[in-house]
Image (cartoon, rainbow, N blue to C red):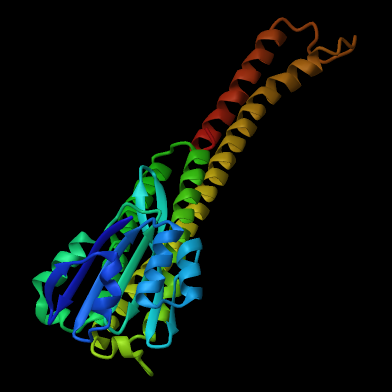
Length: 321
């Protein structure tokens, strides 16, 4: 679906144009054409390929999707693939945004995501002095917005981990905690797969041989790279915390099992003493000491109770009971 198709000149909007007129404006070096598509069908992509003169391999990648985040150079144009990550309920939804950036055009194709870029377009139109930089600045603005949207996702995962840690030390279900920690780590992995490949790719836009499209906007792309490095480091740190939390949870389970084992052993000892005494006097041998003594029975009971009380207080003192 075609969302926007706008022509700009000298940083200012000229007009909304029809898709069939794109090539006429692209031929004018002083113009910038910015087109946005959402979940396009093959016919729409084929039309854009003809109007902009896009490389067929890049168009194929944009059509089929499921691409790793990357930035590729085709002649004097760039083809970028970024992952858009957002929460849908409790799960993470990963969409794709393909961006074609040429000398005087930008085409964004988003698939599988509801997050649009109307705010990006409004921002650029409010800053014509920046929009004069052309397609390089538009590419930066789109990339910067997508990368900045990773931070709220990371913050939500960080808050989720804190809640799980509180449940761990509150003594809630160990199995439930392990499942929640694993789910949190899986979501972090999804976010890392969106961030990490872009670090090296974005570095090529501000250092070394910079593509012509980005020649005037290197400082802006350096800022994007800084954001990517920062969030990637934060993801690694949070993943380590999740791993530590899993180890702590398992350690607490082991401690709890040890406490249960000690209690069972203590109770078994309390039962074993009277069982031993009763077992000896229940063997019914004829010549047993104190067998016919008047106080033999109460003394045996007193010995059982006395020894059990002694053991009980000893176990209680050592923390077994």
